[in-house]
Length: 358
Image 1 (cartoon, rainbow, N blue to C red):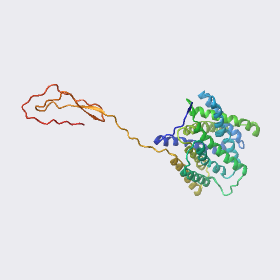
Image 2 (image 1 turned 120 degrees about the vertical axis):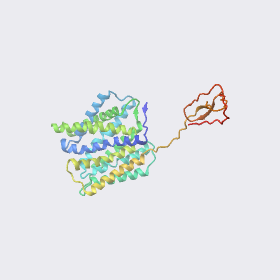
Image 3 (image 1 turned 180 degrees about the vertical axis):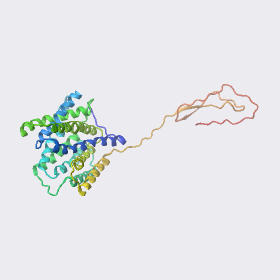
């Protein structure tokens, strides 16, 4: 049995998006960690250290393994989200100077929109398409430089990486999760599967692992625990609660985060044009969420009727109290007023009976 994805509405929807947005923000810090702490020119080894140790640790914590058709599904999702995406991402970054890789990565929401139309039968949304184009334009202003040059292999790798991540995001929502399996276990499955795919590539292409000092070990611990295990857990959790295309638009925050962290932590200057690009990219992200937010339809609830028993007051003149209660149906809890068992005799003239319902 598979647990289906049920998008939320209202404040819960906005809260889930806000928490999920932490993932691309954390991913943006990976650029600074890689350049300042990790060994240079070892993209596959870095990808391996991001995925496999974290995946094995999560498997040990959750103690849940995929079964039946989920063995194949976990392998496919691990390949798309981790095993293929990481190497393609690093290949594009090494082959494309000037931030072109970041721009190509920002195309992922557009791929997600197209795939969701086919896989999830979602109707094309013009506002989301516009939001995607705005986001790409904003990211381009942030990361592109005048001397940026294109490389065919790098461009193909960047586009393939964006498509791989988009496909993994859409299929994650299409397949849901097995009954009783949480996002943490799913994260462990995908990281382990993706890491096992990268493992032979890393040793065949890059050879033996490099020597690591304490600085590099700290960097790998950060990107493994915070930048990968925790971040992907939040990402998969978000996909299980909101539309996959809305989650994909949050990926625009990654290059924005990288630029801001570089400005604050590394002293990298941001020009007015780049600042404008930050605002435009954020605007595309917000527009993408507004276009995908489910509408809340008001529902009128009719309160059930309950009997109210009324009787004449006991202090009125020459009033023969009824011997049986009179019942009126009103939408409230039952209210009972005591009925006297005998009439009250008095010399006062007869007065009308007044009954007040509160």
